Image (cartoon, rainbow over all chains, first blue to last red):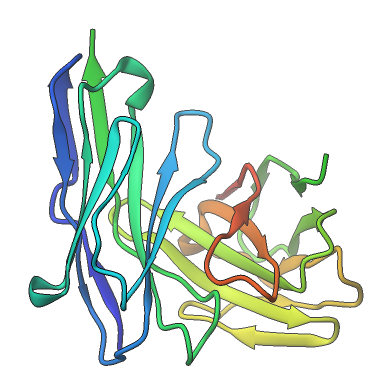
Length: 116
Length: 113
């Protein structure tokens, strides 16, 4: 069975600090997808990134960056120079692509609070 | 613009009552999902559908049912609401040709007294 663990339940930082969210996953499949979603205070979930298991290249999008390490089964997310608008709950998720397309298993989420 | 809407956004009901949460999407997506969100558990999959007349059980399906009579709608029914079903419910959809990018509704907060 697949599992996603986000050990940090809440992180509080001061604006402009960097913050890294940890995500560790378990799966027996060799082909899978990893995701990060953001849930701002308004409640809806917003897709941030998808990474497939064959692509270990790190990705940067503006102030967001993701570090995928298959050797440690981790897919960590860093927000550089955090802003108040980054305050949200962030979810890491896993999909075993061939077995169940689009069925995501979510981690418990990490609440990020960015203080001005 | 295409969207996914849930109703009602807030609902208070009593134990034992039947409750239906509506989900409507205008993307013409084949895949639709219902998740519940509880503190410490993240989102857990209740039911999902890959197309009209297709429904499947997810991780926490006991006490819930869905039906898919058209592409746009996947209503979630609690046959006999229990206090353990107090939660925030999210509907999501995705296109069959894509993998994993779910489009979520705004959520429905259900309280069972």
